[in-house]
Image (cartoon, rainbow, N blue to C red; front, side):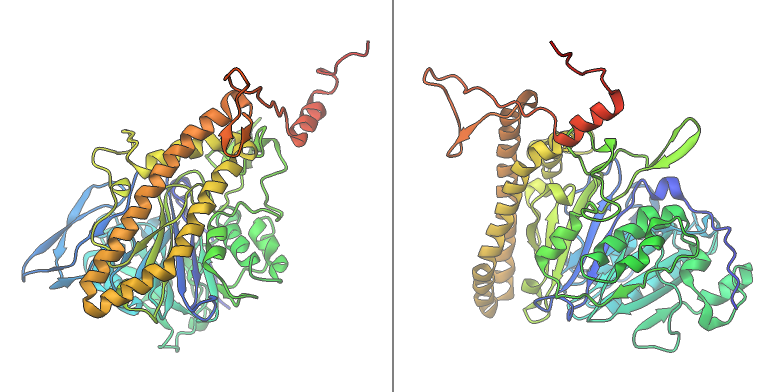
Length: 546
């Protein structure tokens, strides 16, 4: 039997501050044949929009400078490829899409001398790959050649025909090497990862659906971390053992995603809860009990564990108005004892969120859509960004705006303006946001068939005409969303000023006969809050009998 040394040093404080979430759906598991992949890019202080890298031809000897995606620090340079492809956000013109989540793993495996960080690998691979398999080859070859300086990462690497998960770690300071495993997700299955390594044992003889570094197992043996049979080797348990944090803060999000599409997740609840040491771990993927739709993906990206044992609606942390969000850090101490908060998929520290929809039956520039939002996925309308787009809307790429500079032309800031009004008064105000959010997304879906029919007609004349048409449409929708969100911000401050509710009639605020505002409604405490106050204070606030 294998031996796994459990002295895995997790980079917990750093990793869980920037914890992200990816969901994946194979083409036969989706309702329309799409491959879906999602990404919540979560990190406090992250300010980021919709990136763009234009297609290009490059002369021999041209070098590319590498700057860390997170810190913007210069790492070095690598030779540029002879040809690079158009990239908008995390999708390229060939419908290849790549996301990630950081799992950290053994601290001693980090190679700070490596040139390439995880973000640089993603965007370089998107510029150089026409398929997911090609992207895997690009990423692993570059990392093995120039070194990898990030912690352990899980990557979602998808195209319209295949979905892959790859896990990668460095081999220690100065090594300029990596260990990695990539598995193809069955077309009939769904998969997820959320900051915990999830690849355990794998079929090392399945060359069609499994790829891994030559020394993936040998390196662990040399370090004394594994001494069992090759077929018993587990990447996860050897390089990034799932401790309580990895299970409760990370695997619980995977559990919740699977729980939307399975009748058998109760058996894995002890594992996701993190308190039973030898609980049965979840599989890397499951076959869903129904076909997955785009709306399902939106709902899952907005998940707060509703209706599960992890739900955030039964403790004082919800505040007065049932807020399904919690402050960070995830753990806190009271009288020397440590406690924790739940960490759902939808979280306030999302810099951006997207759902990539990849469709093999359409011309490639029409088939790929990045449904994009510049804040917490629950608090934004995902607007369409077609994969061939060559310009960003101003709201997703605003001159002068940054993490310390507000701009009402910028989607990140306007969306955060609205969401930060709603968070503390969630049950009071969220319905108003949801109505606007859902109406916008409904309008995008209603227009999509006609827009893409027009694009296909233009494509028959010239692919560039179709790309230009879809680019204009995408940018218009994003700017219209921004305008509507500004209106929403004004509406919310007027409607809910001073914790009251102003009455409306046919969409207009009511006035009295003399023209002043009609008397406001004062909803007071929700029932849960009122009862909690009485429970904790007894008769302190009881009105005495006359």
